[in-house]
Length: 354
Image (cartoon, rainbow, N blue to C red; front, top):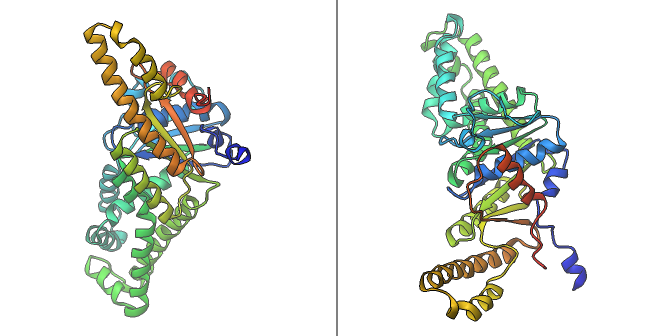
C-alpha cells in the first residue's frame, strides 16, 4: 500500500517544466477559471529553464495585457521584467480576413486559383477557421521560440481549434478524391473564375492544397506527439467546472493529445481540510460576534463544498494526473512580480500531508 501511494504523481507542474522536449503547451478549461493567470505563471516558470518562451492568446477576449499590465499586440511583445519571455494576442477571424484580402490583391495570373480557393474556404463548414488556424500555426512555427504556451478560449472553442487539423485533412482528402474522379473538371472550374489555362490552373490549385495539407499533417503529428505537445486542464472546485474538465479530458484523448496535468484554482486553505476547520469553528463560534459567525459559517459551507469536489477530482485523476491546488488569495494576481510569486505554487505545491 505504501508503495502504491509512493507512485502517485507529484501534485505540481514540475514534470512539465523539466520536460525539455516540449514545444507546445495548451492551457484550457471553462470560462472564468483562471486560464490566463495559469498560462502567465507557467510562462514565468518555463522562462527559468528555457532560452525563449512565447505565450500566445487565442481567446478573442484577450486578457494577457491585463495580466502583465502592459500593452501586448499581434506581434511577439517582450514582457517587462524578463529577458526571454514574450507574449502575443491573435484573433483567428482577423487572420482569415487578412488571408482573403491577400488573395484578392494577388496578381492576375493567380486570380482564377485565388477566386476558387476563396469560394472553397467559404463553402465548406468550419474550413475558414481551420485555414486561419493553419496560418496561425505557420506563423508561430516561423518564430524562433523554444516553447509556446497557448492561452486558449473556453473549452468548446478550444476543442474545435484542436480538431481543425483533422477537419482540414478530411476536406483536402475529399478534394484530392475529386481530382482523381473528375480529372480536368477542377481546372475548368478555376478557368471559369478567371484563369486562362485549365491544366495549369488545376496543377496550381492542387499544389496549393497539397502544400496546406503538408503543414496540417505536420501540425497534427506534433499535436499527437506527447514529447512535443501537452494540454494543461484548468478548473475550479465546483460541479460544472469539474464536469467540463472530465469532458475536456475525454475529447483530448479522442484527438490523441497528451494531457496529464490539472490545475485547480481558487482553493480555500488548500493545506487544511474542512473537518479540521470545522472543529475549530465548533469550539469557538459561541465566542464570536454574530457577523463573524455568519462570515465563518459561509466560509465553512464553501470549504466543505470545495473539499467534496477536490476529493472527486483526486478520485478521478489522482492516479494518472498531476493535480495542482492553487490557493485563493486576498488580492488579484496582476503584474509581473505577483505573477512570478504566484507561479511558485505550480512547482512548489502545498503539502497536503502536514
